[in-house]
Image 1 (tube, one colour):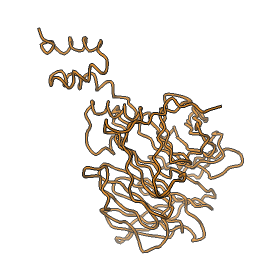
Image 2 (tube, rainbow, N blue to C red; image 1 turned 30 degrees about the horizontal axis):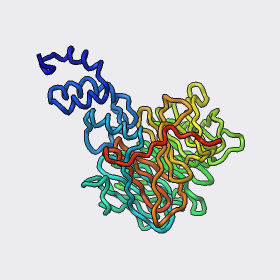
Image 3 (cartoon, one colour; image 1 turned 180 degrees about the vertical axis):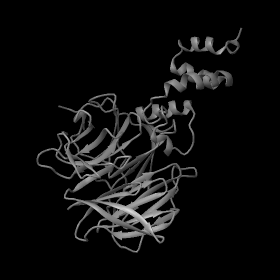
Image 4 (cartoon, rainbow, N blue to C red; image 1 turned 180 degrees about the horizontal axis):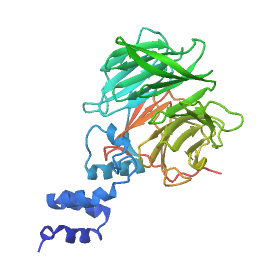
Length: 401
């Protein structure tokens, strides 16, 4: 009797005694064995993998260019954990600029100065080098932040002017005084939020006679460095640029204006992401990445950067992986929220001949196979698909005493 003559139940009993390497060899050796291993073994092994997991179809799945097999997920997840990748540089610019990124399955959106460009994700490389579309308006002012949801883009300029691009075209309106510096924007449905170094404003977007305009319904005397609206638009969660009382995380009810001062012991928050309406992730000035739970009003887990560097930005895969961009050396830390107190891997981009100095990570975006890192002078793309990438494993690095 041959191994391929056994039924699925018997094969699964045999596979329990096989190592991962044995399973990979059997997967490649025979189509029938490969299909059984793919469907029953690799499916379970990759369900909760960092950045490649597929339980409940996490948000990172919606950014992938194509559907990955479970064997591909296993390989790519191992590359993330082991630090095996190829690095490519894109869009060099001599003038320093804190670019913002957003990625979906078809394209990458990146800001520089007063324009927002769309680059298609097709071809042999991870990204086309010639932009497919430039999204801008006649206003000559740098774009400080933007948010894209489905086919709608809401972007804010440093001079307080904001524009919306959707299926009806582009509409621009001045929402803040020109002397204010706009930090961040967000929107959910017809509720829009914008925050400067002076105040935060909430707007209702309405359309009349084919024209779109914003109606102010709440003016908050808070300056949020970062903020997110809840999925139902009922709450605005924001991180203050500085708070002497070390309670920089706040929540604002968008209907009543009620403010909640959350019990998160941090003086300044640079970026904020939502796991859900109850759990918040924050990147902090005090060199920590924190998970805050509204139900118990405290930080449930805190990770400190091993190099005592502030975190400028976050990216969340929708399951268990969080990427944090650091202030120095263009470094990105990978964390597993199931593993308290310890990073999983560190990624250090290589230095270029043009610029040898350290750079912060201003913005992060990723799917299961690629990581996009915005630095002072260019965009770095980490390709984790290939097994012939260079291995840079810092998972066991320990700081010297």
